[in-house]
Image (tube, rainbow, N blue to C red; front, side, top):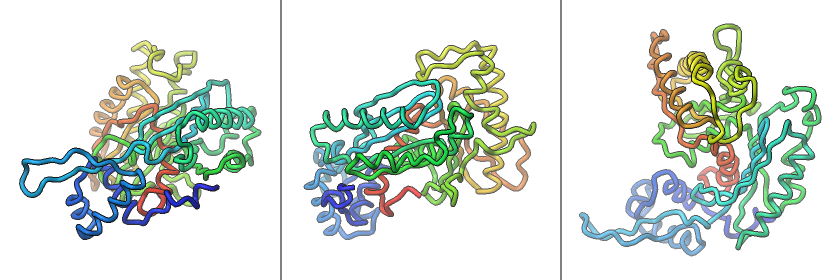
Length: 368
């Protein structure tokens, strides 16, 4: 765990606040940072000078010709810090190196019939070693985040070895930086919060359609995971018909109707309209019910729908969900806006990388 004691990661709360504002709003001049933070112009000058010297910020070209003095926008330096993300799924494991701006620099993956602890550890160790040997300055890697479904042993007898297995602890044995682990539905939500391209309010729910449907919830601008780290587990929400959302709106349900598995990339996604159409219609009904129930409980104004599906399928799901929610009774509450997510298949791996980023660079040292 050597990274925790390195001076380059020892930032003040105000420095982290500056970096967080630029991450969410884009390049900002010092005057705008002073206004947003409430810090004096001199304090902003001192803080940003240090951040530039330490490699976290880049200065852009001077902007002239506007009202007031010329200004210099400050942006995140892509190589200011690097983060590893590991995403464990039902049929696919992924490892990525993500830069300070959220760009994926290196990506590795492996497909399997089902994941075993030994296979995942071997994949991660080999992949991390390869990345460390190929990065010019591996010391800029702040940590490893892991996105995984919880209770993997509930998937079937072949997953029994996961019961009681300490994935984060085993990975940390060989690493000189910290390891963070979170539910994969929550990490997909965190990715939209940290790296997403949407303009979102401080409160929203996030639904992610993958092999199994899942979700996350953001309140007051923070990811909420709950005492058992299952808050926002919308896949488990009961829906009409005595089922859960994941029974209706998951890709596994579509695959069952197809009679075969779909590939883990958009290029190989071929589903006849006569099969995809009814699945979308039923999934939208369940999604609309879940979103409205979450709204009644949390008073959220926006629900984001994303997933490991092609953009065209996601768009159909969003449109159908908007149409369905308009038909549901909503006396006493305001129907939320349904927005299409911006990260698709990369959401969970980016959310995994966001875990160490948040620990070291968010103002309060956490997404939650």
